[in-house]
Amino acid sequence: MVGTPPRPRREPWHAVGIVAGKECCEAVRGLRGRRYLSRTEAPQLPLPDCTQAASCRCTYRHYTDRRAGPRRGEEQSGLRKAAPSVEHRARRGRRDPDFD
Image 1 (cartoon, rainbow, N blue to C red):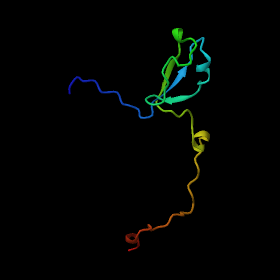
Image 2: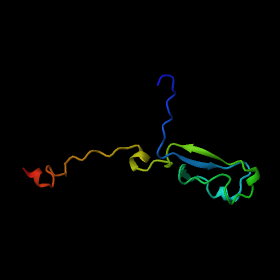
Image 3: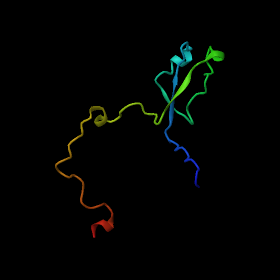
Image 4: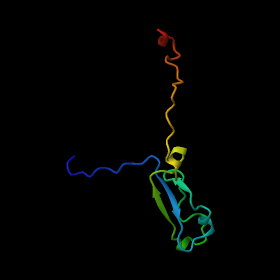
């Protein structure tokens, strides 16, 4: 269709974190630094245990992924492992047709 704006792409792992307001309650302090999948895990704000629900200023911070940092050693150090000099995989498969 001409003139129709493109639909925003849905991120399958869209996550949110809770950003505490200036005077936050204990319930939010315990959740700092944690990310939740936005569709299934994110708690509603204000939290049920919030002692300042009427004046709560907590908000969500949006992320494209729930993961916070690098997970693999290569991502952490920035160094790649050298390719093996000898190929250890078998040339043929394990199935009967592979042996023909």
